[in-house]
Image (cartoon, rainbow, N blue to C red; front, top):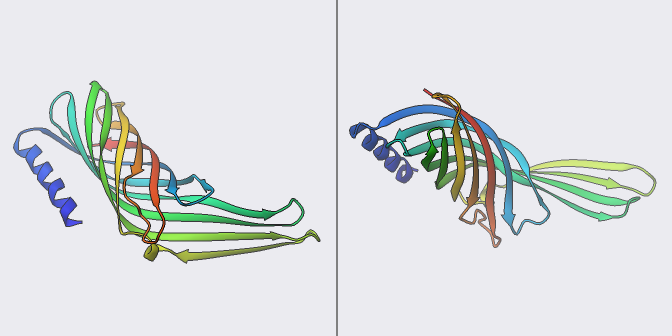
Length: 207
């Protein structure tokens, strides 16, 4: 993590020392996340993100925005077999928590609207799997079972991704962002390929 934080601090120091406008703030919002790759029957999982930002305004058109965000992401999937009378259904929910550090370059198309892109590194904080099993029998009865597992050991501790999106400043202090993050690295520590995919909608405040 030090290899990421040191360049971020250096970037902030550069901005301050060269008289560029530096503002701090906070943001929060909704994640619509999935895990792409070898995970079958994948569905979106709704999560959230929250954290701090710093905007370094280089000139009227360009800015750099380092961020530090807690992000809840993952995916859902379902396995079924049988028929309408007798069947087995298993719902899987994979919830992954990351500390994400994106470094976003912003280009202001007009004074309030910016196009944004930049890399991101994520540090895995926790990883849980919840299995909900429903068994429907021919006599009309049901059996339900729910189990939870820690799956952090099967995932890599660091994830790399890239962000693209746009931002809009409603006022000098209040802003909104819409961003898509696609994973560049395989997060699985086993013989499978899994990548994070997250659509984010945020609202924030700059001090």
